[in-house]
Image (cartoon, rainbow, N blue to C red; front, side):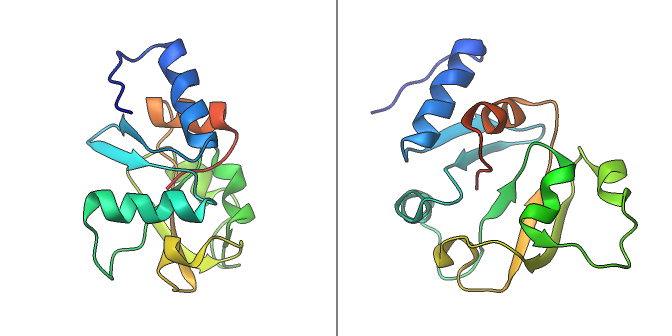
Length: 136
């Protein structure tokens, strides 16, 4: 089902529900549009690759709503200052670290690394918070 709606609180709630149900959502970011899904749903991840006609390279990026949660998903090296990600995010930065969570293999295409981003104050952040989980 395709449903195009104007951005609103109701649209955020609807998008979060679609994500939780394993669906896909197209959402604006600060600079582009993203096709997102529940980062922990293998079927949804496969559908993202299918819809985008993505090949065997180009893992998805994990989008989080709060920089403080990065360590829940990646191993932040000791040499990274404890507040560095908080100073850099939200922003247009994707950091790549060793994966520290059990994502479906398709998300990272089997790699042990994971790109993670936190864009902040955007519809994407609102959807992540409403869904209660990161998206890819």
